[in-house]
Image (tube, one colour):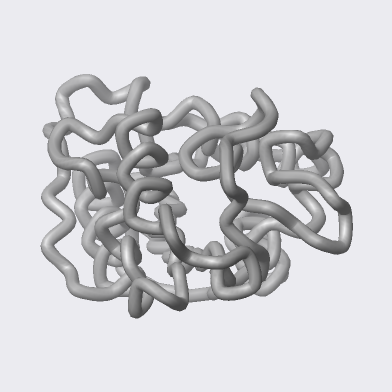
Length: 198
């Protein structure tokens, strides 16, 4: 069975990704399995740049096939913020609760219909030989007036999906893994990943 590294220490992302590749003959590792790899500076100005920075660094350090994602929330009335700064929107170190509180504070007087937003994800797949593949996905929604739900992570409790009448944090994992930005990106790269795993 081939090993693959998901370049994250986020247990929520790891759980989602393992569910997405459960039908593949692959052993998914994370950065928690490689304590010697230092924190990777995400110095890019786009999701694509940051995903590639992480994937290249981890592939070089481990000699394994690597999948790295950079993803975040884009709120239209905030000109796309928090964007690439989503994980550390309220400062370092990143903290989901503080990020959500800051977002709600900035949207305090914004009407519901103007709270349109999307989750965006770029997946970078890098092989030990240096081959690189990219895929992107997005999921449209609204920012709720208050957090709701205890599933997921990050901004999931605030990301309201009108077609379900629920926030991302209220969805069953099976549904989230069908409609999320990360799931969309994964579907786009699935054939490449299947070929590389073989």
